[in-house]
Length: 298
Image 1: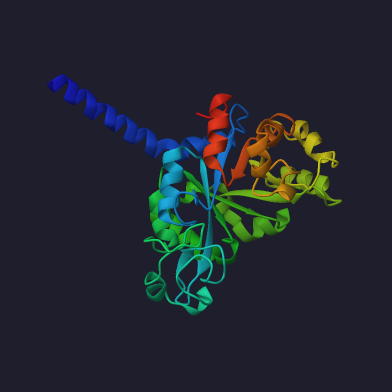
Image 2 (image 1 turned 60 degrees about the vertical axis):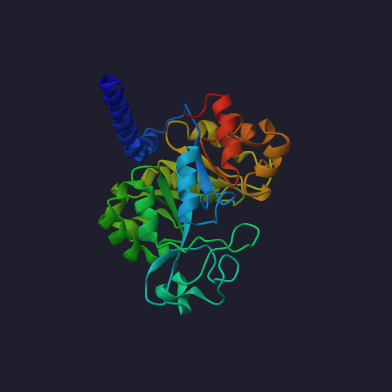
């Protein structure tokens, strides 16, 4: 009995260490430009389980096994960073009005609404609370965060989560270097490139030569654009390819809805035909199950 108890304690310790190291393992995959598996990004957390941008949505995403959770930032009247997509409270909380006109204490009195608009018991979290919930367990993509980077960075340093952060944007390379400066060695920056623009290929080439990003988020409306297929070969070994499957015009029609009716024509097309190795989705469970069947996710 004693031996069994000691074994169970040791096993629990190993699981805890593994969970704590998971964010570092995902970061390592990104820097290695690892093509052997597909990284799953949960859009605003698992909002089908709990309200979007809630701690519960982040925690459930971690339990499901996603690799990155995308969250959105807004700033309160008293300069506290909170998680919320909209500039107003109306859609996602029991309150109304602009976030910039509410203090944190006032926002704390509200509750979050779920995807059906129904009030829940969940509260609006601060960025610091979200960082602590994710610490060591998952990477975080901070959306809308470049507006507040001077406030974000001290929180990352305070919570010890600097190495877990992905920032994205459409700024040209020189502005990225100027804006993020010395933090580029810690915070991962991924350029967003619209492949339907005339200078898209040139943008990608400039980024590869200057800041050598670990990945690009790419956008295109339809398969008539030849560039997505070309980039599969062009970027292999240089940068991973990220596509959003939230709606059709972000990934040439190969989105979550397409995947519900024809998963190989949706997620499968992005992976096999376009070389995509990072997918941001509103249906993380569907994608994870598909990837596990194909042995493309741990």
